[in-house]
Length: 170
Image 1 (cartoon, rainbow, N blue to C red):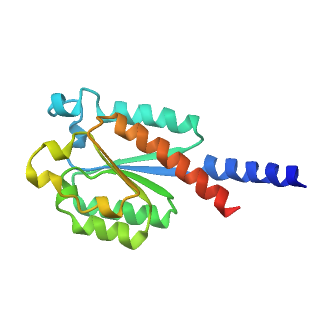
Image 2 (cartoon, rainbow, N blue to C red):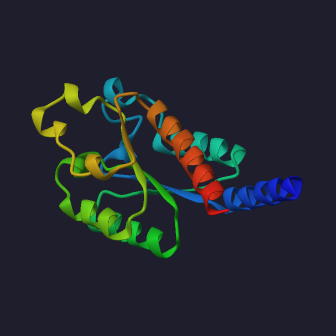
Image 3 (cartoon, rainbow, N blue to C red):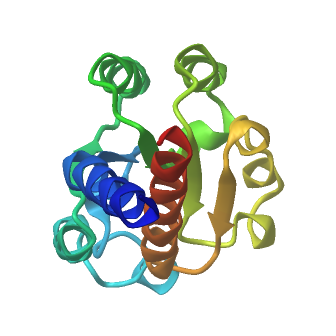
């Protein structure tokens, strides 16, 4: 009986994981990744980063969705769309919206979608205004200053988080 239960649990977890979509939201100026201040943000383009993450996601049975915008309202609408699509997790680099957008914060509070906030640079070693985030206190976690590796670490966490939640639903 226990073997049957374990097999059923394993199949359900695999089904949930294989259908799981994670949304990567990229904020303003991240479309210039690889070109903009390469000494801070690196030389890899946003498309290259997304390609790396997509390959890693596929290895873990995840479907990744990527969205970049320079417009605050579009980002909010995409969070709302994720809610209606039942997207279970978001990884966001809100860029400068981090320090200014109560509206993006409210979108996360309204939808209750768990998320990780990622920043390529160490915002605490930069200008004072970059040291305040309207999202950090409601995020599952924050990864700051680890370059593009932060996205990979966030994806690892999201995968583990979703797997744990899938086990708890069985």
